[in-house]
Image 1 (cartoon, rainbow, N blue to C red):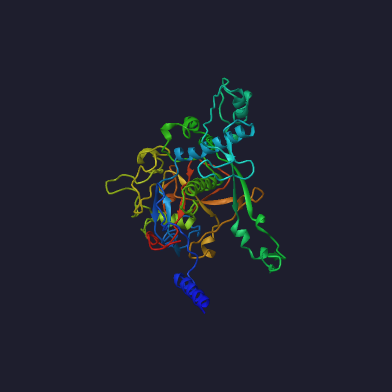
Image 2: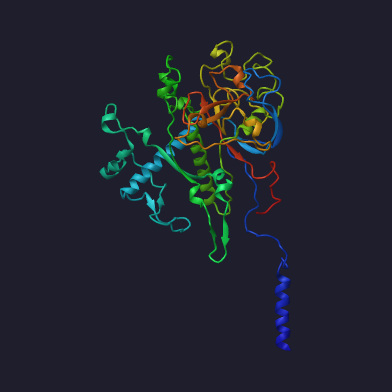
Length: 452
């Protein structure tokens, strides 16, 4: 009886100390309370509904922007277009990663590590590149110089024998999952789960069928300033625009859709690598190009019935000053203060703090172009996408660009005007900016009240 009494007391104590008491409470993780911080250089765009498309006018009679009420989730968006200086960080990272890989492959000490010096984590395989060791581009060590030789122009391409990085070698490799292809019914029909072997039987496709491997050359097409306008003297911009400090804060151009997408992937990995290195930090959502609907909602700045981001039907302020960088007055380019591109943020922002949503440079979106996509796209976060391959016809490679540029007339500055360009072409009047979807409903809804 004494033993039974003691056992009963132990069981009662254990049950009484269990805070769940057998109830369903979900998985509790010992993490910090989550909130979505404001990304550096980005403005918050709240969720909302608006009439997408033109109102009472359709100048071209194209019927490609038929009015439709849609709803869009909240997100962060870059306050300005991506600048030369910002994109240059991407190019330099690719350059340095290639150089470090070359040095590691040639057994130069210090450029590959097998263990994390801070956490003691042991890396699989041959280890990872070490980013702490500086690269000596003009090293006196013959082995180092020989290892790096492959990233420079060959000797017969050099001018006055000067060693320069060959932009054709600056290729960025990344992976992504084609979720749209994976979701198609024909790839999932006929699947049954074999409980005995813990696997799917009769499965037509596994994950490898949807994992895509992309290799993109990241250097901008600086010759776009010449080949876009053959009979115009733009040689100085071809030679200086991307890399010279004078143009640091000008929008990057000569970047095609694939390069803009690769930049977003790299930017996501850059942030997530940092967050993973911080104990208890949670990975955030990816950076990406905005959909056509997200771009228009952001450009309107809450002014749903106005044709321009600043509100109102005019391209001038009450003082008679132009409000964007475009082609006014039948071709008087400098009447608005600029000849070609201007430093970002030169004109006032819209009501959500976004600069140059119209003018300066047109901007890539994530959406593929179809003149009737408004008719069949859903009315919540609408988006038409098509992952065109090199073998697809040109018509399938069209991507939506928005906002107009320094070389466009006012019609293309209207927030509802649609235009397109081919995904594998780069122009001296097209740039881009990124968005980051907000993890929640609206700003502040996950501050300190939810634990994940």
